[in-house]
Image (cartoon, rainbow over the protein chains, first blue to last red):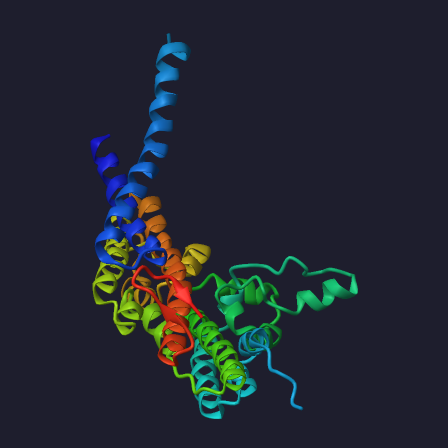
Length: 62
Length: 287
């Protein structure tokens, strides 16, 4: 699980740096923007996964 | 008075036949270069792969009775990225041997240079699309030059092809060296992760046709990896194959997004150099 989360963060960050070079061309602001986008992206992905796991454990498997 | 040329017509003409867009734009030297380069690579690819580039997808209008359906069934627009060279693809699509029982049997047998042939047709077509975009820019540039009475330079085509071949090189040529290193490094790292997780098996066009079309957004990476690893045999179960293929394809697609940005930035720089616009420190453009 930890490995997958780290991989998600790494891949999300690398992709965000390249993709958001379209809207920010200065290096430091680009790295910060990519960081913010990676956090949002990772929360969407892992948050949905965590929520569904919680629902499964609390109601479906109980 | 001569009618004003339209940039989108140069783009469509270039996609219809290599060099036709540049001919429309009035640049005969680039037209000849584009035609010879793309045509030789494409024809060599078709010959080496024995028309197998058409064997992976079917035309959805094949067998149609309607007039439009018959016309559309003659166009291989389902072949990607060969659609970037639609005229020559259509020519060879209609010249291919009929798919009878014997041909179906032969298609299942391995062919020595199939991988190289498929790489050549695919990448030469993707390159042709970038050259057509260059022709589009030339027409737009000449229109603006005539309107404002100023000479406009610019290297849109060069920057596009450079960024396609080497991720980040487009930014480098635009003088944004730190961004170039970040973009290039990120995309190459994604690419390397993709190769690692797929155990170097995630870039085989004959097995992963549509994924390869997305990967070809990174032309240099696709060329080198396809030639080096495309012929590798899958001899064992690869547990992270899906992840590897996806990462390679995402890297290719993100580079396509970067290419659109390189076009815009090259255009902006050319207009800035000609004194037609001013770009402030925070990136705001003023006419």
